[in-house]
Amino acid sequence: MTNYQETLSDSEFVNELIAETTSINHVEVIENVIDTLEQDDSAMVSHTPEGSYLWKFKYGSVEVFVRLSGKSDEDTITVWSAVLKLPAKDEPKLMRHLLELNCSSTFEARFGIIENQVVVISTRTLAELSPGEVSRLITIVATIADDNDEALQSEFGAA
Image (cartoon, rainbow, N blue to C red; front, side):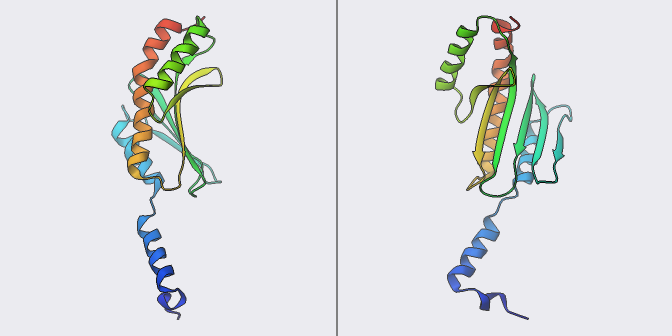
């Protein structure tokens, strides 16, 4: 039987040990964060054979989605929540308002449009992603969406 240390140089061995001890189980981290935020046992998850995951949970008055595209450094975590269906009343005013919010109060998230819905969204690659960053991304999107959905629907809802 080959001794593991004999097949690697000292620096390779140290680098491998560091990688093993610092690798993060992103699925576990995401599920822990969702467990702290979700309400009414609303969390659901699906997993594809290709290795992606999709979670959905309720936070305040919004549904929040978290998608993990895989587990490599090049894969991404995307968090989003719909806050307003389009078309909306006074869309030019709405777009200006959303741009102002993007500039002043969305941190790593942003407002965008997906499938005729205004969403709060954030995406990041998994490279060097810490558990704290995962928690921050999910919390920021959920909080911004919950803080803004009712006001946006009241002012700009259904054209």
